[in-house]
Figure (cartoon, rainbow, N blue to C red):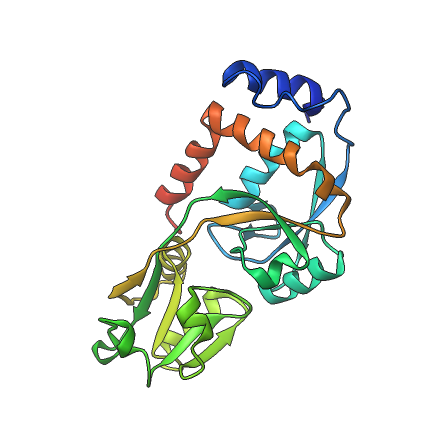
Length: 256
């Protein structure tokens, strides 16, 4: 760990790197050496939870941030929907990758849009379930991740038949077995999951552009008062090219 006084040293570095006065409001206090608990679900290649190690694009990027802040990171594994509940209760400090919604802003602070946007793709097996346009969705059984948000019209459409599961692996297996007609998933995680499990599926021509996903902090967490420092550390990582390298690493990574 590199113990850095971000309010002084890092702010100074960033001001030299960019325009003068960008972080001139920062003081001389040091960032408290916290131990932060990050709620994570197994969602490769974003969050990869294995017995021997925890990795993935989101985890590696946050570890880089924590390293510059002098924080220790521990992980609490739970399904995506439960992590939202733990954030509400303040039982975990940080969540990596949620989309920003008004409902979630009631109990978490969206600190930085740290992760790249990804298209929402519609995967299918049978040609009869190919999605050409939104109007093709009614009448289909659509697999979704529990607690996830995809895009407003879809999320609020009560006329659609949606079947949820705790992990994208479960959804793709349901697709293979014919238990759902279509699975909607972010592009990278969907393709990775298919490769990892040797499932053959097609991608519909209809897709929805993605929104950036965030580093979020529980409103009950002591880490919340260091939101500016998290953003400053992220900017330094971007300046060093580390963020870009990690994104490319996982975009190119094979699941086998």
